[in-house]
Image 1 (tube, rainbow, N blue to C red):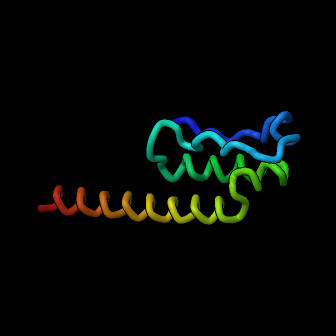
Image 2 (cartoon, helix red, strand yellow):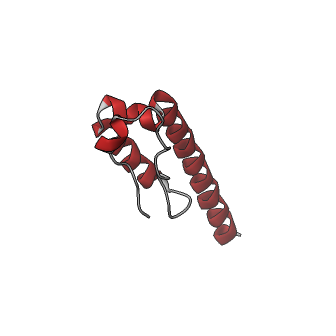
Length: 86
C-alpha cells in the first residue's frame, strides 16, 4: 500500500484558497503499519503543511483508524483461532 504525505507545494503557499491534499491512502484501507508510517511522515512536515492536512485533528483521525484496524485484526485472529480449535 502506498502512503501519500508530502509537503505543501510552494505555489500553494502563496494562494489564499488551497485545494485539499491528495488522499493519504490512495490504494484503499490502510493496515496499522501504513497508519504508523503516515503519522511518522506527518511529524516530519513543516507546520504549514501539517495544518494543510488538518493538524491535530488529522493525527486524531489516524490514531482512531489505527485503533479500529488493530481491533479488527485482533477479532479476526481470535475467530481464526476459534475456527481452527473447533
